[in-house]
Length: 346
Figure 1 (cartoon, rainbow, N blue to C red):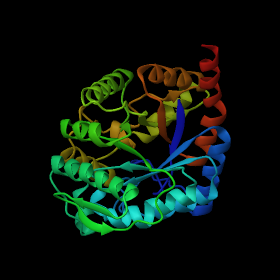
Figure 2 (figure 1 turned 90 degrees about the vertical axis):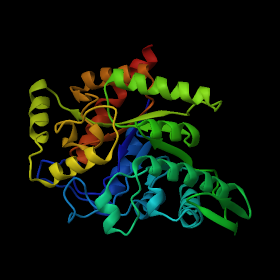
Figure 3 (figure 1 turned 135 degrees about the horizontal axis):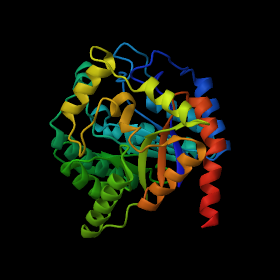
């Protein structure tokens, strides 16, 4: 199991709780460096221009600028930056950002290609918001165009959504960035089978993850493609010393009330996405159905649960914490060693 965390680009992961945390760069760099020391190997830098957690007026950092800065301040951490094709020119993304970031990171940079879901954000930022299946068609073509730019000189591409010719990309990335992607709809799974190196998913139960992984492995094999390199899952972790402390924390963060920014975002998200499970308001208290995996409890309980997911095929966890620094340290000091020791014992 590889452990990762979400770099905070907005000042809270909680839709119901008023408290916020610092997103000053010194704090984020300190978290990244501490994560490396504790055994975390990857960080996801999510991309949104508006906050779906705190509301549209809340601060949000740019994922790509932040990724470059973190790459320069770390030595082992894989920097996984989210990229939404409709928000980036493929030539600009490849030539001016991804390739340069791969040089800064010394080969540690990778891409989480996201087909986007938020119509209001696209409207505010002057981006066309296509129908659900069309967004995945764009993403599939977009990744093919990126790979053409990364490998060919000059590069040429003629597609329905992306076209360029006689395009020079220098320098090439030191290695091609690894492509992660997630999706649950039929269109999403079909597209990802074709273009991604690794599959990511929202949080789910062990049984749900076993089904998804089995399905994606089957699709990949039937397509005659190499197996996915990894299967990752988003999750929200709560680690406390006692059951009472755990339940108190769950109760504190899971009340998303009508009329709040979180509730309006919930209605927008569930109407624009095609998900394979119903998303409750409790699920939506944190992003990406992070509480659904049940990574809550004492250190031993959480470690045992992680081993169940590992047995089901999950090999990357991308974690969020209510307090990004304090809770990350607690998880790194108390849970990761238990998982590693259990693996060695087996």
